[in-house]
Length: 216
Image 1: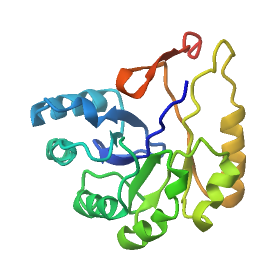
Image 2: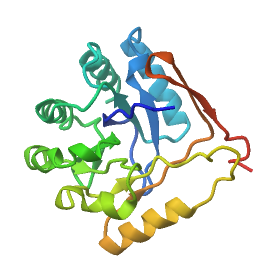
Image 3: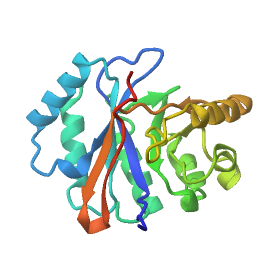
Image 4: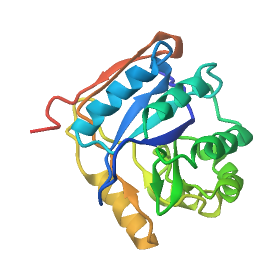
């Protein structure tokens, strides 16, 4: 089955005081068309109770409700192809300065789900926004991903957190990323997930990854 990989801007919405090791919850903005600010507030309180530091807001480019959904989310907190570069810059400018936006070493944190072909866009995006860029580029290995666009990434995030087929999950990919990034003096954001499924017939995506024995 051929899968369409979306390149998605991930904004980080901080919902508590960040500790030394921050924990993010992946959140699909496309599910929030009927959300109110009260719904966002409720979800953030649940996150606080679970000691989650921030939501990673996963947004597909071009969806009409993106700006309102993100505005609702930030008000509650005291993909269809690649995002246009200018639109990414505009969104980071609009939301990155807010106190609720997660910052790493004082810089607004930005990430993507895939998009190695657009890595060069981030040279200008970083120059315009001074963001800290830590994408998931798992379709290429850690070393090549780190070298894209002359080293535009400030760190890397891995999406490899579930077993393939009937194989057991290993720490090989984590070790590879950690070794490569440590040698370059850059951070690695490790993924954690109990299970994963998708049911999106419009994108020919319908599967369940085996996660039964990930937690014992």
